[in-house]
Image 1 (spheres, helix red, strand yellow):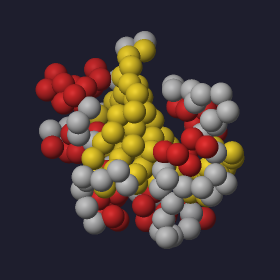
Image 2 (image 1 turned 90 degrees about the horizontal axis):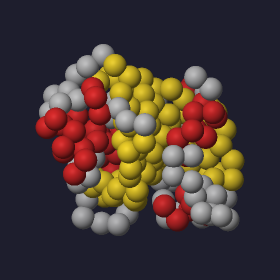
Image 3 (image 1 turned 90 degrees about the vertical axis):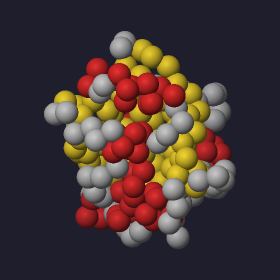
Amino acid sequence: MNPLKELQELVGLFPEPEGHQLYQTAEHVAKEATPEPYHRMLVHEHHMTISMESFHDCTVDVEVMASRFEDGLYLRKIRLHKSGTKDAVQFGYVRFNLDYVTEKVRAEILAEKTPLGRVLIQHNVFRHVDLGAILRFTAGPGLAEYLNMNVGQTTYGRLATIFCNGAPAIDLLEVSSPLD
């Protein structure tokens, strides 16, 4: 995987308006060089829903900012918020081949009310999360708005693939809000 190429593909799913770039810079960072607390938050093969809830000591809600189907894939742009608030803890993109889940799981995902990781866990979908790369972002106006941070501020994210029932079903970009 070329992390910066994969990043561009995922970000390109929902292009930002002119002059509202998502980030100023994005740099691939070795997993071992990822600073704490981002290392604990991102460098693992678990669902980010669980990591976010553990780190922030609360459940999270999903906000689907945009979604559509393209070439048989379900695409969505999301934010996770601390439950019952507008405090964003994560921003991301999802590219999902729904052929690898049951109709019931598909319906719950398409309802867009529950974080993806929680849906897969609750329905006991056999899954494996493959961590692809860690990225350091310098926020542009997009990330600044989506994660309530300053333009030029740094945060970290990851690229990952989730295998459902043995097949690579989901590609993700998951960017953490800035952590103290």
